[in-house]
Each structure stands twice: as structure tokens, then as C-alpha cells.
Image 1 (tube, one colour):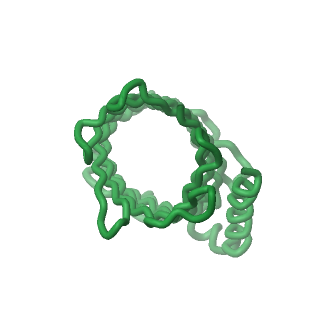
Image 2 (cartoon, rainbow, N blue to C red):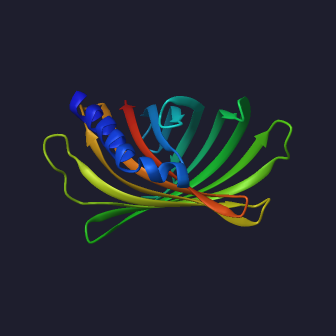
Image 3 (cartoon, rainbow, N blue to C red):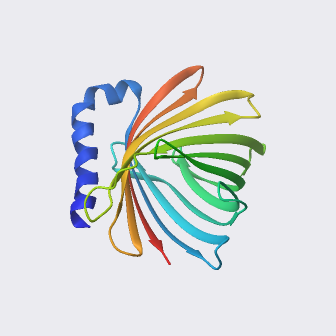
Length: 219
């Protein structure tokens, strides 16, 4: 486990060093850390609680946290439906802003040539203080390599997520993931990834280079 965590931090700082000059031109180097606990109370129902912390300004400043909780129902072999609620605190211009975000999800899973594919559609309602509430749609398409390496069952994957803001009637964010998942024990898993996020701001696009580390307890 320590080696997996060390690898995640090593990848982040190595990437930040290589892209130090470009970071000032196109965005920030960030570290995102997520812990979650997940369990099923039947073969069809699953509950999950998640905490996430995001560090910006070359991973030196905690600027974002969220708590997300929800329930998922397995409707068919390939389709699951979920309802979640997320509470967010994000620092903007030195001020901590609260946002409440209920969201519903439809997750479709299937196989192609032994590759595992998934497509998650998310509709979220963004409730912000001193700002009009708004709807946003997100779609995340993922592909997992079929092989599992070593006793830790390491599996590489790729994913891409788009964001569509209904209030602005525009596509204004994209996230491209490349990473791997691994099993640390029977009930503990990890996910280490590189994420390239491109966000539209003031009619221009800003890029962010992110390394993410997730730990998940399953019971």
C-alpha cells in the first residue's frame, strides 16, 4: 500500500517538475485525494459515502472539499440508477463558497473484446448562495483493460468526461483520465490517475494538470 501511495505522489511531482513553465501559462498543478466507504445491503442496493480534498497552487493550498452520499439500485445486469447529495466548500478569490448539489445518475456497463466499458450520465442541480441555481449534465465514458497484473489485480483504464452547463447553454469543461486501479486487500482498493482538465473561462480554455489518489473501503 505504501508503495502505491508513494507512486502517486512521485508521478505528481515528476509531472509538475517537467511542466513547471507551462503551468503558469495554461493552469495549475493539483493533487486530488478521495476516500470512500461503500457497501451493499442486498444484491441490488448499494450505499456510498465519499470525502474529497483538492489542493491547488502546485498542490500547496487546500481550496476544495466535498462530502457525497448516495444510494444506487441495480435495475438490470447492465444498468444501475443512483441518487446522491453532495455538499461542497470551494475557495474562490479567498472566500469559501458553499454549494449543495443533488444529482441523479444512470450507469450503463458492458463488455467489448473483454474490455470493460461504462457510461455514466449525471444530471445535477447546483444550489449556490448569492447566485442563481442551475442545472448541469455530465457524461463519463470509461474503458478498463481486461488483464489484471500481479496479486494486487492492477488494471489500467482510460476515461473522458464532458460537462454541459444548461444555464450558459454550452459545453464548458472536459476531463481526460489515465490511471490504474488496484486491490490492496479484500476490502480496500485504490485508484491512481492523471487527469487533464480543460475549463472554459471568459471565452478561453484553461488547462489543469492533476494527479488523483483514491482509497475505497468496501464491505
